[in-house]
Length: 562
Image (cartoon, rainbow, N blue to C red; front, side):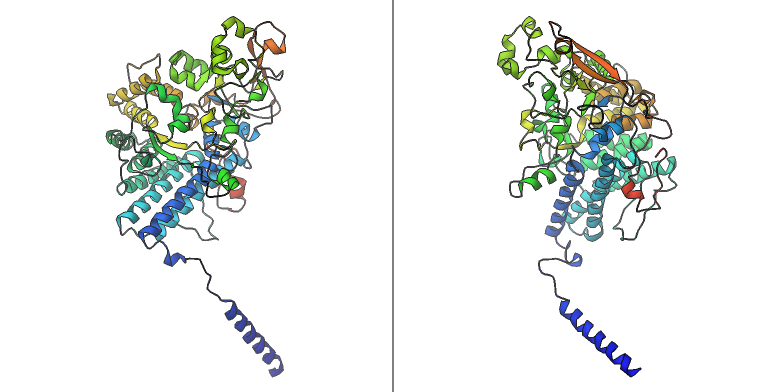
């Protein structure tokens, strides 16, 4: 036995000696216990949190942020377009309700929100709020964590509540009993968290305070609390929080002539913005990292028109795009009847006639050249219109304009540094008007009318009703991530049943049929005829949990229909 033990003892001593030699203090690294202690540490942690927000929410994997695509595509007001069927399929799957658990937009949006939550929890666990700076930093993290959970609840019903740093072996389950009561309870948790955070957050200084629109303030937290309460059906509490934002006088609607600027660089951090992910061009880091990590990467390509299919390029557009979205004809016609030729309507979409004859085309010499030509001359020009014989797939005779990038938005090739808007004041006014309509309080009518008058709309409400609020919100907030979620909570999803059927394409008879004058016409196709499409009640109210999450977490119960 001694002959056996001696080598074992020597080997053990030898291994221990080597282990001691390898136990070298790592240089240039601060242990967690030694960080988060000073005001400077806390502020650095907050700076990292905002960077995380840009990476996970605004920049997020190759498109204009997964979250805007995910929450806009399923509504009854837009179409997933592109070059042809199969192009932009990650968006079309969502728009047509044929998405599955492997959809990249769903995955990126879901992981992005939890990525931000992780960084908020780092601050919440390690920063002791014993100074004014630390209290503010903790409150900023708390408000952003509430916003993330609110978006998760709106999108996935009862996702896991993660209010602390999880250990690697933790497998969190759905919140509560994974039912309607639990869904509302999770939203009300968001309300309470946002309200608590608001107590330690400063106000935006005034409507011209740009810094105050680029960080979490009291107004942001109160907006989160108001929206979460609205979605939970607690109209009194929602109204209370939203009215605080209004009464603060820190936000204003931009004037009518600047409405279109809200969706471009010239509108960033303006008086109407409550909170934006501030995407800046940082020349101190590498070109590729700057584009990917600090921008709404590829948003210009995704949202811009496919100008390669046109006879020449429209003068107002920046780089060419993929034509990833279009406006639904029935929605465009409703808005046209409501707004008429209002500045808001024209900044939202163009009619076929406006597209052909009121827009400046580079082939005609741009603004100056287009202005010199008569209507009759334009009608027979081969420098305008849709030249490609395959037409514009997914376009229904109206031309989305709201998020089409201008030249000003193009700061670095195809990579735009336009900020991602999380909340603007118009949404607060419309949510407040809804809470008033739900509680028989006429106070909301003045704010509903303010939105309509600012838009230059032909319709001004004379009474505060839910129908008036719903219609106005659909027009004002088109493509701002509101419509589908509103339809679900209102139980008004009938208009989604045919999503994915009768897909339109717009053609120009001047080029396709050899007619002597431009004439746009629409034809439909059914490329999904062998695939089930359209919204199914009980199945599609919420997005699927991504396979990347359920495959490693057996405790996460999948939503119905997936």
